[in-house]
Image 1 (cartoon, rainbow, N blue to C red):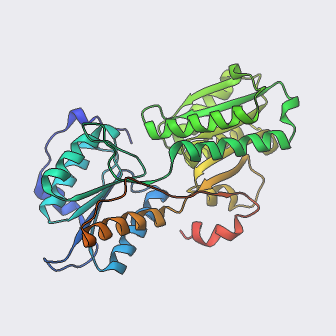
Image 2: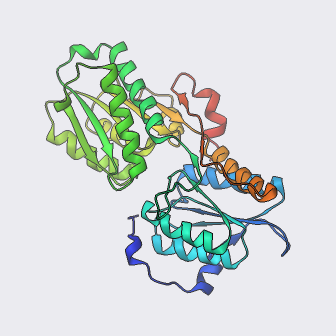
Length: 332
């Protein structure tokens, strides 16, 4: 799915859109209702995130509405309006386009509702940060890059002249690029002698299939490279890069990739075979969704401002400790 520009917003039928929104918890008219808008609902990360939010809303006794907007800015804005019209007191949103920040912030202010951004930070028209819950993009990238560097040194890759650092990048997503920049900075700090000329920038669109295709093309363009290190915005980017090397007959020992988010850990480690996907910085997105609901409900209950930033902590999952996460991640 492609990102859609907020500049191409066209009004959709509110009646049709209302039918697409699911009221996932029965609520009386005078109950508090929370809306949850996410950009990529079929992805395991967002499936878990919305499920966590829904469960927490049920636990707290508030109504809950959710909508996947499929990276569609038009649908995000009309969904926002429809939820407001349906009486929500607060909305959590994962924007499909960060440029929507000023628009949704203004809508929330005019409607008199609470707003919290999840996963991707957004800003008002006067550059004030909308309350945010999620990762610290640069720091989690640094954790991934530092782990890449640790493995690089532990396995003696400094003796190889044919190592390439593959930065698999979604240049349209500012959050993703901050993760990549953090990973690159941490790697170069840990390996100061690494030649920056051997960093290869590989564009993709945030999906694993795109990363497979982009890295396959890159491998063909760099036949001299026999050892590859990957970092990216998410697990999809890194596992896509690893899958591309597998298709080109690289051995797992010749590939180092560390992902971010944990959504593909089961795919990578579940078969129990050696893999170039060496680890992922895991965040339980279900807890992130639940935390967004907690913050919104507490703010409404106490009539207090939302905290500006609420960061969630990442844990490193590897093949060695994966069994401890298997029941959580491999429940499909």
